[in-house]
Every structure is written in C-alpha cells, then in structure tokens.
Image 1: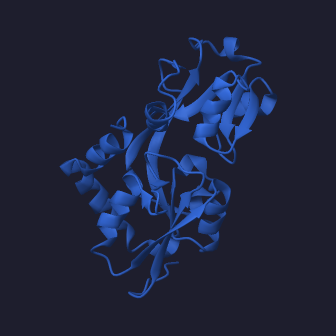
Image 2 (image 1 turned 135 degrees about the vertical axis):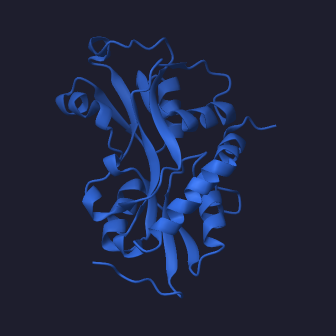
Length: 232
C-alpha cells in the first residue's frame, strides 16, 4: 500500500542525539550540520516538502519510523528490527567499522575472548552478536562515540567498536594527544542509507537519483572531507 504525500506535508528526519559527527551533529545554534544534513538540505530545496530535523535517540528514532512519527532516519537495513517495513535509499557512504584500543589489536577471535568492549547503547553490532550474546565479549554501554573513546582512555573497557569516519573526527577534535591502535581489517561494513517510511515510496526514486548525482559530482566526498578534517 502506498500513501500519497501532499505538497503541504512536512518531512521529519530523526537524527541521533547524542550526535554522530561527521555524519550529523549540531552547531552552536543547534542547527544540524554534517554530511547527511548537507545532502538533505540540497535535495529538499527543490522538493515541495518542508524539511524538519528532530533530535532523537537511536532506539526511539527507529520506533518512530515504524509508527510514522518520523519520515526518515539514518539507518542501514541490517541494523533495524523490521527491515521489511521500511524503504532504504541509495548508499550515501560506505560505512566501515573497526576495533580501537590503546595497544595493538589482536586479530584472532580467540584473543578477544573475555575482553570488555565499549559500544553505543541501543546499537546492534551484528559482527559480534554471537560473542556478545554468549559473553565471550563483555559489553560496556556508552551514550555516544565520544563516551566510548573516553571510557577506553580511562580504562573502563579494553576495546571500542566504531565507524572509521566518526573515529577520525573524534581523534582530530578531542583525542589528538592519544595514540589509538586500529585493527587492520574492518570488522564489518555496510552502506549508510536513509531509511524511509513506506508512505514516501514515490519520493524515493528522486532521492536516489539525487544521491547518485551527489556521488558523481563529488558533493558527498567533499562534505565528508570537510567535516572530518582537523580544526584549524
């Protein structure tokens, strides 16, 4: 079933709080910035809908999508509870996750057994789902990626699992004096997409075409580089 959108409809995007720079975060005036807001602002400038951002935690953002409270959020299909109930856009960026530590990271799974790992609350970590469920890896929840690194630095966990771009932003902006070691190979990777409520099925082809063009022109790469760079 399709729900036709009307020209006067608002389009509400749930973006995560605590924030996830460089993908989405708030400026001092609380206006969202980052790769995703730049992309959406440019797209909706030529659409007959009013774009709104709502700060929400990861869990409530997903629930709000199913309920129709929100129209979109930044999610990949493998991260959600009911992927069949949502639509997923063209990929915005390739999303690679790594393990980070204060000493060189062992790559053999057996050497990770029994270690504590800082993870973000409400996030699903499919790469280590079995190990976390069995207790082979001991989960320590944090409210944000900043907290994950901060807890790692303060030895409240032995590992932190994080996206490479988020980790780069944090190191450049908050942890430049800390030596982090990153596992050589990505633990997991997927495509970062926008998850849409099904009522926006008619809008999705236009959004997908815009994202493909943003890749072709380098708009997304430039935004990612700009939001990841070290502050001057």
